[in-house]
Length: 200
Image (cartoon, rainbow, N blue to C red; front, side, top):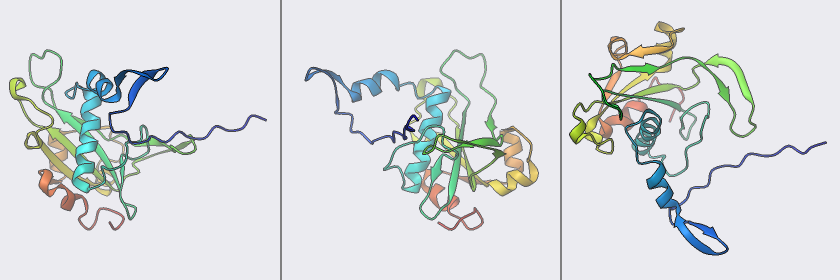
């Protein structure tokens, strides 16, 4: 019988770790990060950056991101947060600003420890944070500037009641659901407000 292979949990690194051969450094992890992950405007990295920004606001950015987990952020006390991002500006050439749309489709869950899929399609988080990179000038676009973001916080229960089977949500449809609009400074209070699921 083949023994099951356990998970390899991510270990938080500093960036100083060398890329090495026979004890000789040929680069370091920070160099790799700069080479591979400087394109913060692209959809994939912008989404990861949005998760990090929300984790910073919630005081839980000390760990590591778990790819493909069933929710994006797990808070002490059990509250679970789903983070979605969108932007008017893309990294490619545009003839006009992008329309704003967020994915809200119920999905299967994946257990990062066991590697097993939970087949029921659900929205597993208690609260959604919709992160809009609102800046509209490419010359001055800076996703690291928190003033260029606006955040909308909505309990998952509202989505399930009014948009149960919907897979995407435009900005106008989101605003019709009366989310809490916040800047970075107010985001923690908005997410931890009563009525968003588990107690903090």
